[in-house]
Image 1: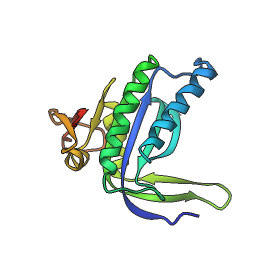
Image 2 (image 1 turned 135 degrees about the vertical axis):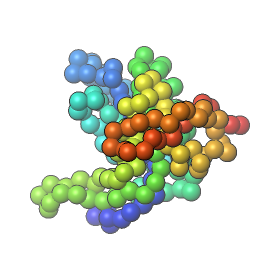
Image 3 (image 1 turned 30 degrees about the vertical axis):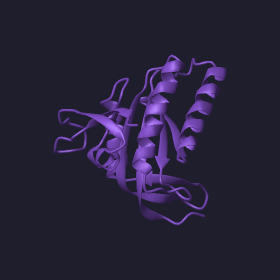
Image 4 (image 1 turned 90 degrees about the vertical axis):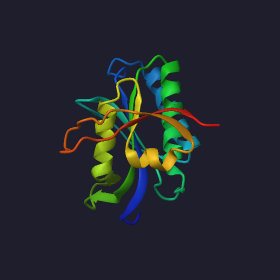
Length: 178
């Protein structure tokens, strides 16, 4: 089993509002293949695919064992831009939130049923940024600061998100610098 620990990770929450129970299985398979391939291209991990009141959400993570890199925030933004482009080509709108920071990474549950998961404030913030980014990508200040040499960003007005008393500074990655 994996050792539970606090790790520095970059999290991508990817909302897929066009995917529903009526989506043909062939299209869903193609979509999942494309999501996995893109995350793996940047040496990230697929954490989970969930369905809740926000619709279908895919969670990708950079920095989980055994693949952690100093440039995981940059890799996370590269993956987010690639996912956004890929999903547009499939005719799907998407909202993506990207955050970087320390989070609990480890197994939760009992000996009968457990799963490897990520938990923490920055994980929740990625979900909130996803909700604030219709058909776009938003990232937090730590991701921006760690990747600013490799990307052009639009600095947005601070936004109010659920669960935070203070306004959050958000950035929209525009393109990767050459």
